[in-house]
Length: 445
Image 1: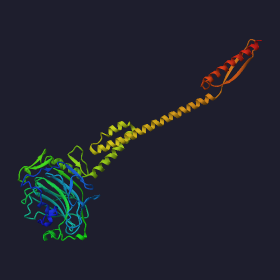
Image 2: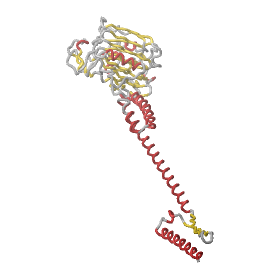
Image 3: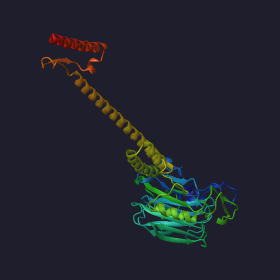
Image 4: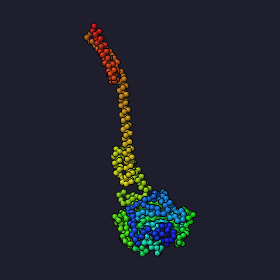
């Protein structure tokens, strides 16, 4: 930042004034270790992120489809977010739209406990530029470090603003184009200690500020013309170091004095560069890598997409094979959240498949039952049709004539359905035999 701290710095911990404040300066005393990110993360600010906390005026912070919205609504408002992690060298990119308005300042910056600082700022009335700046160990004896760079309509359009910070060089980019380079041997010092990330909006043009500050901010702010809002849609952060914490081993403030607990300073530089590139180009990282897709919304969308694909695949497999096979294959396709969705999808597919098979079996059973009924009915129809039994008795020796007795009787199957039917059948047969014998005797006589 450019201006000296004033009374308003007590209320505005963003921008130029941030460097005048630290809760514990490790160059003066032993301070708590800094929590390390140690990975690469993509943060989608359409929903609240677990990686950032509101440090001021949380009631002026909301989450929209354009990202996190921070609003300056009245005097002394300075809503902002601060990361709950530090990086020790790394690359940070914000997709951001600055707030409009004379005297309104939008900020995105990195700061360390010993007051190293790397800044990006936008003046609400400056519709063609972004300002870059840096500080070392809180040194504000001069304000000649700031530079302005052309950018198209920063208050109306989202742009990608990138900071690439290593032990040897600091580079600023706008939409992928390099706009400024600062070398580590800069005579005004060089930022080189673990940093957290801050973004917020504040009133540089408040009437209580110094005249120079108000002039830098574009003039005195008109609170009645507000509210004024800035938006941060997403942030990609790639820590070039590994470990769980960063510790100052002495009071030199040199990067070589920083110890990475359970890790190494610059221990993942190449990996960090590669992963950042993948995420910035819209890709995703494998679950096994030291990275996280941190936004709830992005994770959910990605997981939903993976789930839909997995569910569709599982359903197709279920249709052509057993449900247990489909479930087994689906549950092995993805890891993490996506895997969880895949497993749920395969379970649903399995249940659907089982239900289909059960319905199919039931239908087949019904068909078999219908077939059995049809066959039985046919048999009964055939059984109910009277059969004709023909008894023939002939005496070729005497008359050469024959006598035929035709008797209608029921099918034995039908008649035999009960003992009475069987008895009746026997009686008829006996009667027929007697009649035949009687006729034969008469013919003989």
